[in-house]
Length: 393
Picture 1 (cartoon, rainbow, N blue to C red):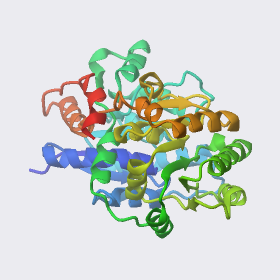
Picture 2 (picture 1 turned 30 degrees about the horizontal axis):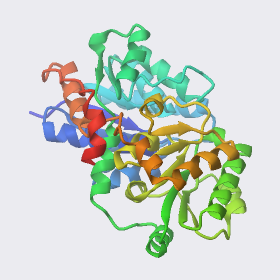
Picture 3 (picture 1 turned 180 degrees about the vertical axis):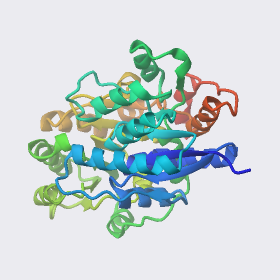
């Protein structure tokens, strides 16, 4: 007898990375058949990210975009998902995080009365404008989800504060920790030739910089790039790798600021194995990425967060990340403090990774099976485990 299907829907690279370990865990458990569904939001990047785990989408939707608006994207995805699920109805749908894909998948499944499992549930900044539209998306998904898989105890408390029943919430850890540890451990050769050449020639400490969020574009990005130039001038023993956003205007802005600057390598978006390996080798990361804030502590790498607000406040509480916004003076001051003192740098991540113990995907697969009456509910992630993973990794 064939297994019932559970559809894992992702539309962006971070979603694909965080869903990949879950698909593998479902296959290992053998209770449900995982179907990886690429929503069409960023299909090429989803395919590339899954390939790092030996996976590929089982279904890829084709979304035609003319205006590029969120409304256009959401409408197209919901329509196609509804048509798919009218003839191929899964036992459950797993959505990840807070993208337009997550919202589309949750709504389309809810309207079809398919149980929605929300992976990485409960993140909150408390500000609907920041991050926008992600804060609104995740709050909306929470209203229709049947099972809320929180990455941390704080995320779970956010859900309980919103009157989500405790029986519907489980602390699993974040599957991105599972993903990055498994990929980095393979030590694959760099696919990006520019990065491979730069790392082969490098003799100093690596500073990884990412500034991809839409709110960082324009003047904030100029300030961030100015701070990077100042750090390069101050510290002759550092090398910078900066994967740029694929948007042509953003790439032109980055190139205008950093073209010809020695010891700076600007690249196109990197394959996930390249990014994971860079992160594992970095001395320091400057980032506006939520995912990197979650991954960096597993490698003992502190993060200076190029945002004014972050929903990943566990990083701030644990001391492994610090908000610096786009203020160049603050970026340079805080980065210099860590570059000047290895002791101070190492102290930031001494408490380990608050986001997971590398077993979140297993808990996710078992919790979904339990929702469908196929397995007992798993135990929540032990709180102390999250403080120990840094030492293990």
